[in-house]
Length: 94
Image (cartoon, rainbow, N blue to C red):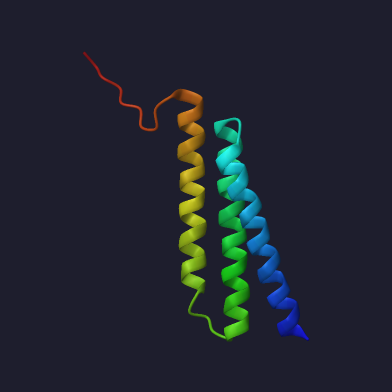
């Protein structure tokens, strides 16, 4: 019973990722695409967690942490780029 529910969850996560991919391709603006990319990463993290439960292993927990950190950093960088036009600001004292 639990395995069937987890498999159904994986299918629904894959469906959500497909919908987000459509938003990335046809998104009218850059913020829409950034939100869709965040949605993909969150669903991917959730899918990896479900796979970890299905396989009864803790081997994927490090992957989940790394994906979460990379998603956070990329979201911050893209929002900074949208707001200011640059990611790393360099101040020149001349």
